[in-house]
Length: 152
Image (cartoon, rainbow, N blue to C red; front, side, top):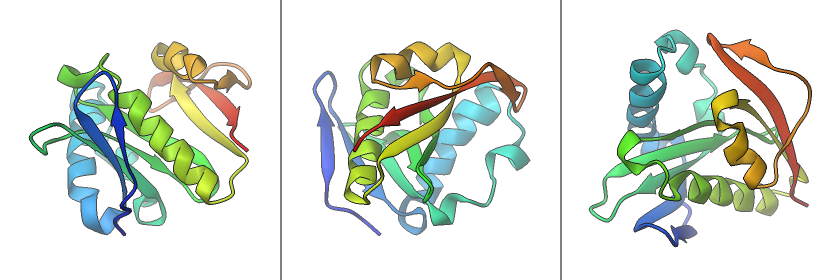
């Protein structure tokens, strides 16, 4: 399910594409495993939840074509599994991924997006227009907060 819409992020030479799991699942899972399982200690059975085939995914690739970040949009308007490889953080990759997912959600007629943000990433999402809904909770042993943004 390749989508020819791609997005360039101004601060780095990264292209973000909307892709399907069948096409890019291996690359997305490799990034998520590196970030969530290896770096953050999330158990693999939590990371792989069986929902990926029902989602659309954003895949960020660097100038040499190497996958450097990913995120997904569930059919109910939840954004999740946002992950950027360590060497690419702070360079606009996450912003590009989120903007691509928001644009895709808008094309699908979604009026709002929700996500569970790690508390350490809350400021990132707030700068992009997301607002906290509720109090801190734990997910996979990591403090999170639910956030929401109206997009339509």
